[in-house]
Length: 247
Image (cartoon, rainbow, N blue to C red; front, side, top):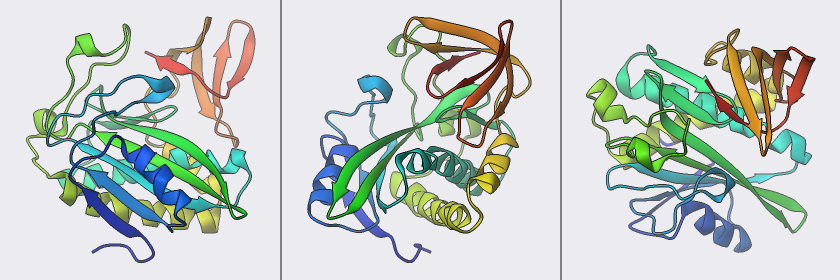
């Protein structure tokens, strides 16, 4: 069942669903999911190219927002929980699933999905957020296609033998997202944070966070109430707002 209050738009092809969301925001659209069966100019975090083979999932949720930017940014955790719920729903199990700070979903230790948030700016006093989501439903990129040190890409099909179409996955994900967004609206980030931490990859273990040329290694203690990664390092407790994490 499709969640009330959310539009649904399925495109045969577009440059990128986040770019399509930006165009829709300029037209005064409301909350709307935009799914593309093919993308010609897909990209990931920090503008990196992102592969989009046929059968994989590329969608963006265009969301009108009115909170301060630091609160809006917390929806990466909302989206991660929704993805986790969607994977559980289509596979019937949670084994092997974990959430990697700041915005990846892991399956059996490999990356199966990623999230990209873009603030599209104010439109008539209301801001717009694009939550871009990519999922390797059918196939995964080769290890040579990802940056050195990154986790191996995996697909849902290869790891679970579960075949699901992008349109089917969209319906499940939209329902899961609506539930998590309602929890965020009513209970705040504390509830989202607790649920996210219960699914976190490598919590309590030693990890490395890299921001530009700066690299910090320490024990992953928690995520704080601002969404920062908290590491216990040789130099003390460090709260990190943005970084690439390596295991």
